[in-house]
Image (cartoon, rainbow, N blue to C red):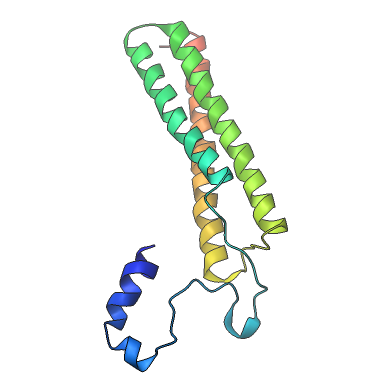
Length: 149
């Protein structure tokens, strides 16, 4: 958003309208000289919106688990930790579906120029982060169930 809406007009200043009247700053869907197959960009609905809701909800469930732990309510802590781990797993399922959708229906690949590589790198690292968090929370859940906390 920043590069497209703020930086491009700022760098172009007002004289770019005179020098290049037909110029339109846009996100290219093909690579240089057509070296990359055309693709469509990922929209915000429905999968990314669902994943955002899952992540926000998991933050709430983890906060509830934390408060229950501080209050000494082991059963409530275990329940909300389990809910958080399940939400993380559901998120990863939707992420896998989103990747399949991007690859098969949008023709979006890691080799699809800067958009494809940025999309898969950012979402891939985030998916790895969620997976590691779910694994760590599973260990904490196991320890809660064993009475270590």
